[in-house]
Image 1 (cartoon, rainbow, N blue to C red):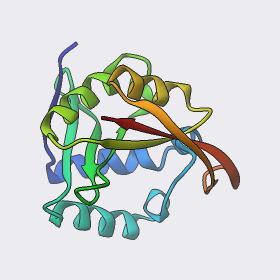
Image 2 (image 1 turned 120 degrees about the vertical axis):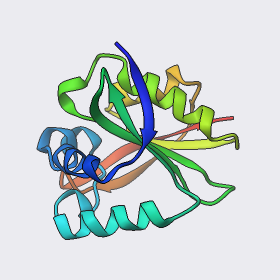
Image 3 (image 1 turned 90 degrees about the vertical axis):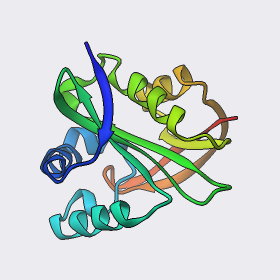
Image 4 (image 1 turned 135 degrees about the vertical axis):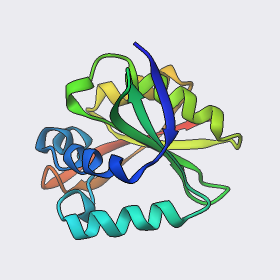
Length: 156
């Protein structure tokens, strides 16, 4: 399978909307925002992301099909990674390969990431890319309607 990252295009946004509004994806990610539920907030969020020169965002493509996105954001001292791969593509190594390519684009270290403590798949993706667990906390998980354990990971 060929995995690549490319610049985001307008035509990618409907795919991202479909993915981010998937209830199973939301449940797995746990920590969601308004833009996961409301198209107006989604459009505002992506307009902000696309206009911020500090954000590196790429569309993840597998065998020519848009399957998700990956991004680095935050201030120079607190750069954070995020990624989403559509549920139909889970378990195929796409997120690990996409994240590995993304972190090559971002030269600064450390990079940070958070994951729900019970999201073994996402933690595994991050660890495959060199991230290590550096802390734990609790936070409210909107998708689950209660507080959850969160792990913090760092790539030095």
